[in-house]
Image 1: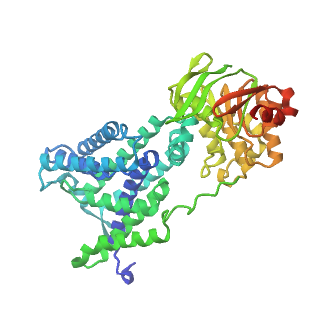
Image 2: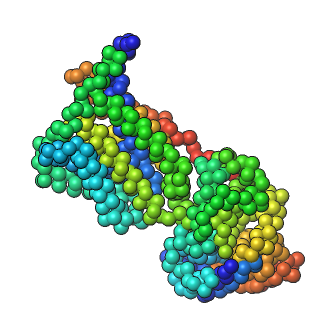
Image 3: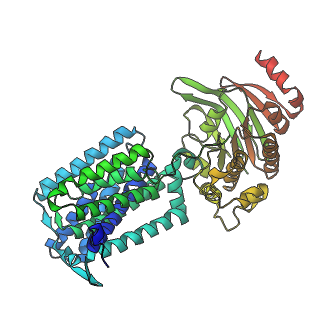
Length: 302
Length: 234
């Protein structure tokens, strides 16, 4: 079977699906925290960068691959807990603008630390090499990481959906995202809900860091930065306040960027962001509240 | 079952005194009405109790223990449930999910029958439990808001204008329900604009104006409520 008529190869589609999956995870990680804190965490990319460095250094120290992944989770989770404790929590009652600028500050701080500590040039996470070997699926060669990341992203999203709908902390998170004041008056614990969102968001950052590092083992201080900016556009595209809408937005923009990246002639890939952000602007002009929201909130009947 | 006592409560937003020196008591199995014009401080009183408005002086005591300075969620978990003004149901969650939220403040573990008594009071909720709450009519949403407060099994129920904007038939249902809730031994503090009905139902009603408690009325005053209030305010 061929997709030649679309000028697409199955490799490109698999790759785009995998990028879509990773961006979906990042989008829901950003969206969950936005839901409960009304805070867009611009430092999300630096969490991913820290995770990527953990994998790269573990690999250069000759640690087994799985310990590198464990280190990545430990570092990213510790960092996001610290971020919550030192930055988000003291600023929780500040205006959204203050919180936004604060996350910019954290982002630049972490990036500068990475430049000072690890240098501009970056490190190779060679332990991720095997994941870049192709699998032969019915005559089509697909990078292992593409298949692995599609599977991981799908599992994570299903799990997350179960947590959000079936558990009480998940229900509390969704309610807090809709109306925090009323939720608290019903007995929903603010700290638990915010802590839960930060924890899940950190877990998703660690998973994304692992998969992005496997896709691109060249780890530099700006690792994950472009991805985060694109994901943020995707989250806005989908709808910031609803986890599912944010996820779909992240997936859409990841998939689109994978397809565009695979089909644009090599000498024109620098136009990729222009295409993406142009499309985002168009969508938001037509549907300002996001592509995957129900449009206007249901009118309250009196 | 525990008594709610306000002792010289003062609630202030910035420079505005919303509630001044308010003292009253609601005992188990009692409905106390709080009536008065818009801006009299009725809602501020409830928000002050819930830890959602700044209490600058005085005390709120539940069973003798102070609630002042506690977070809203801790007040709820101490056994005070609020049916907020405008109902504040979660339109995008189902009826059942809204009720599950009410369990957040419950002090005992909920079993599979946690919603039974709420469904008994409001059978329509059982029928519509899988629907989005936003698809319910205003009257059904109000029933949901009351049920959501009750599944927490509170000692004290605060209601902020539960009859606002409802059809007369639904208002009747709400007031009948409050009478049933009183029989169950809850302490009910009812904020209302419908003065006459509130005075008729409540064990005691207080008229609030400019944050001050002005007048106490008993059920016998129901027929003369409007005249009494008018005479007093004039």
